[in-house]
Amino acid sequence: MIFTATKLMGAYIIDPEPIGDERGFFARTWCRYEFRDRGLCSDFVQCNISSNARRGTLRGMHYQADPHPEIKLVRCTHGAIYDVIIDLRPASPTRYQWVGVELTAKNHRMLYIPAGFAHGFQTLEDESEVFYQMSEFYYPELARGVRWDDPAFGVVWPPAERIISARDAAYKDVV
Image (cartoon, rainbow, N blue to C red; front, side, top):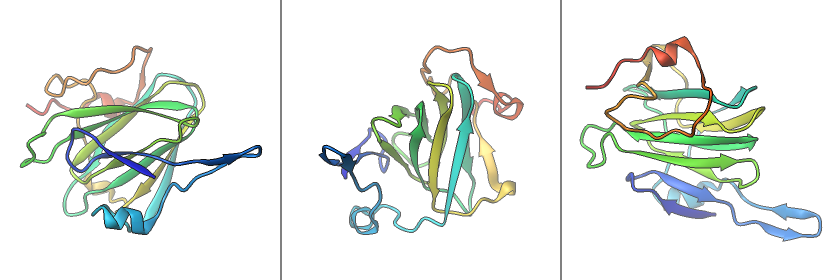
């Protein structure tokens, strides 16, 4: 696997290294040792999928509060998404900065998201599915979010007719 650091400390884009032949290819998408040796979470406790019927579906920006913040490893297994993370860590030099990455079933790219980050995505194709590996169990009482279009972050989303839940649209500005 190829780990590429983003401008946000602790967040990585991870690309598999395919070994191919006439049948297709084989690639590793997870190795406890490779993650551990880089100081990254190597103990995921839960996996989730998000199925999204229509292009333009926007989910986010979500995070789980203390004392159980989540580290996520996210991959698009069908279709394509524009995945966004925002650094919300109070002491971080990149607080309120964001990174966006296109994850597709074809590029097999993954995004490693540290604790203290908000996460969301917008689907770029109909029938897009997202696979999450999580470092923490889900605690509904700790579920939080920030608004996807909060001007404090300035996230530039791909143009689309967006489909957003009432909950995600109702998050307040951080400032």
